[in-house]
Image 1: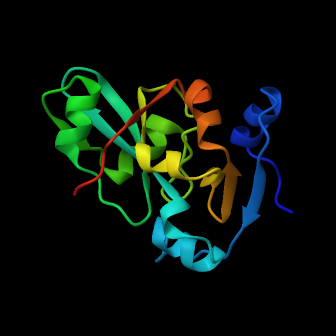
Image 2: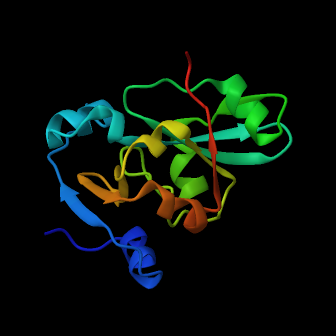
Length: 158
């Protein structure tokens, strides 16, 4: 099994139960849909971590199912911004401490306002990045709320 990441250590510290899942990845396929394909898990349960910038709040984080697309207007409204834009992938590591394909909502350099799409409530467990490519954390989505100081929100395009 893979070495524990900072995200795993934070979960251990808070005594939040989780399961690690390793999968094969390659540089050309780092998206959440590929994670679902490689792990054989339901794409609706694989949640990608997206980082955006709001005109009033600054950086913020959205967790969204692999099969869904982020609605920036909904994220703006939920976060108290007029306008929200995705950050450029080249800035991801500098802002979060994580690289593309290995960005976890747990253990970023700073705790940003975080919003989890309410679809996660449909499942007893969801999968998020463990903070490293090729490694996913399976956990109760309700456990993420206090850990990330997150809020439920409808974030997907209809």
